[in-house]
Length: 394
Ligand SMILES: [Zn+2]
Image (cartoon, rainbow, N blue to C red; front, side, top):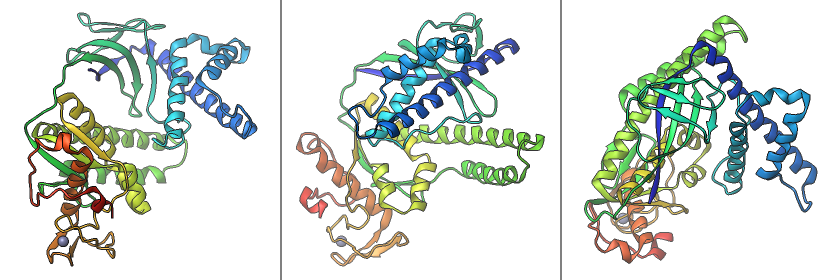
């Protein structure tokens, strides 16, 4: 199988390169926003007609025309392939929305992370530490590790705190055999803890991460009190951007270590679909689902599982993981979000909400996989009876 791996390298553009970089970021953002607007307008004007949406191809033709007009001639200073990639990204965002994988695309903002993609005609000089991309003199790059496989593209980014990076996407060919050893777990992504496994392991976000998050909240309150456009506001914005960087580094570190450990310990991992989880709960919970890094965590679990032959199953339908007692199947219809523990009227046991949910996710996941995979597996934790699917759904 082929796997994609991205390597992130810091780059240090010279003073002379800052301006053309800004021009690339700005033009790609412009193209994205301009055609997002065009796509929305086209739909509003043509709703119900035979052709009611613009395709990638339509927008590519429109872009070529646009660059010929005197008003937009400045776009010719920018790598044309990077501009086209903005259209591709917009198209992907649209498809993700229509296939219910994402929200409707947003307009890109100047103060957010900036990026442009270089799909070809790039070169990395590993000896001299230089990155060659079209329209630029070589850019200094810190290659702190070697890349593997074939380089497919280079994505240049600038963080709101003012740092530049080149993300190098590589395609690696790998032979993966399904893992036959190790445990199987269900994971419930909790509110009090970061997660709870069916082995009754509770993992919290690290203390240092929570401290940084408190600090961010404080800085954001400061920022909101500053006058718009003032020097103080800009300074406060940079401070906020820096702490954002720090938090995302700390969180990534935590998530990578955790996902790595879980994948190496297990041969099958089951989690709930986050989209379903968000919908099932109230607005407050839906927000923490999007903030807590769970979606990044699930993404990491998924690709690391694929790379290591671990079975990864996401339960993508509604089932009463919290309400159902995992050991006897009794359903607690009166369970609310506040209840951390409840007494099962089927088997008289005290049921811990999150642990019970993790157990149910494991059971449901194993059922989903069926006989073919579940036979060689050894279950861990309490319980042990795999219940019929019909019963789980009730
Ligand atoms: Zn019970």
